[in-house]
Length: 387
Ligand SMILES: Cc1cc2nc3c(=O)[nH]c(=O)nc-3n(C[C@H](O)[C@H](O)[C@H](O)COP(=O)(O)OP(=O)(O)OC[C@H]3O[C@@H](n4cnc5c(N)ncnc54)[C@H](O)[C@@H]3O)c2cc1C
Image (cartoon, rainbow, N blue to C red; front, side):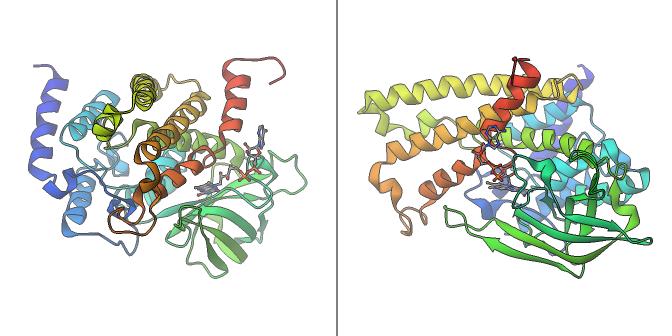
């Protein structure tokens, strides 16, 4: 038996013994996700137990080093673990921008002190993070951001506004792009700052989405004092950290193309397809593209974990994955006909299909729009003239 086979049987046995039955059910909605945080809202005991057991083993972040709360697994072992979790339908034990975005940036750019301070609590789900990048006049053109950060000797002083800050009203800390040198060219003079959302001067105002949910906020900073040691990387060179983190964000968002635990669309729609050859053909085309995306995604993850991925590849994957997810939900709505538009009834589980469909419209905006991703692919991967 190879080492990897031995690891697979150990992981399988451990998961069988430790993953509660409720955590092997597909997630029904957002409320089934566990986000941790200072005041975690666990849906039930099984969810709490699952997160704690996985964190204890370092498997909320299987490939992070052990000294920072990770599992210390090799890329190949981490892949086996993902496969074994998928085999039993195990839920992700912890959703976290700390894991998918900030962690990788800290591992690359953080000081040793910052890694020791922040990474273990991210791995254990103790602090919930939000992302303060976009501003009212800085979205696609992110480097135009204006949030002011002044050096006041023994602390930083932050003033400004962010927008579309996902879960800012629920987050404990923020990773935030701020302007530390207003005179420098716009990509320079930006720093990457971490601070507590409970700091005096921070306030949030929820924004309502078309789906009826309110997952994000306007976030205001009014004379917020931040300790000096909370800049990640060099002062004025935060753009490098920001871009690196965006690659990880896009990798995470591209995962939407995998369809989560919903399985085959053809199987889910079942009988509806029997009487509708046109829809059947659209679904078949979708299924083939979804299969191709899964294969591409596997190769991408292998390359990424081996450090061999082209830095612009997450843009390609983000574009492909989010456009695919939008198509999936369009097809679900087409198959459901006018009944699928029900918004409030119990029968429709409070308009689940319609709300999820509308939510997917944001997939090609969040983390950078589809148009911007295509621009990056054209310029950096295809090397097209004039792109
Ligand atoms: C659900 C959701 C969650 C989000 N969460 C966060 C978060 O947590 N933190 C955060 O900081 N931000 C967040 N965002 C903001 C997101 O990053 C921005 O919305 C996105 O970068 C686009 O910026 P914008 O909205 O200002 O649009 P604009 O930049 O104003 O773009 C408007 C239109 O112009 C097009 N466009 C702009 N520039 C170009 C170009 N160069 N080439 C071609 N087309 C172009 C765009 O594609 C778009 O269609 C979130 C957004 C959504 C929808």
